[in-house]
Length: 139
Ligand code: FES
Image (cartoon, rainbow, N blue to C red):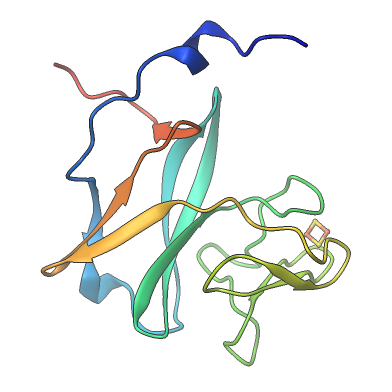
């Protein structure tokens, strides 16, 4: 078994307060997503946040079927019913609340979640071991 690159063993940067993503009002119920860039391990990728049933949710913009971005237009992830996140490539359907694929070629797989929280009038995202800010803040 190979060890992950050294960077993966680095201590997590402290982001207890989260990283400001947007105003809460920027995420309207079941409307366009806010896009943001993160590092997934060592790779820069796009992530997205949208509001579903009143609460912000966020995922890496990467289909579980083929590692491709899913939005049919930038920030447009929901299907016509506004019930499902849909991949524009082969039509996989994901539950917005937890990213589980419930239809399509990757049924049972999940989107990669990004933790988000709404506090006051702002939405914040939280880095994890695998998802980090694109640019580390200067200290
Ligand atoms: S790439 Fe998303 S369903 Fe195939």
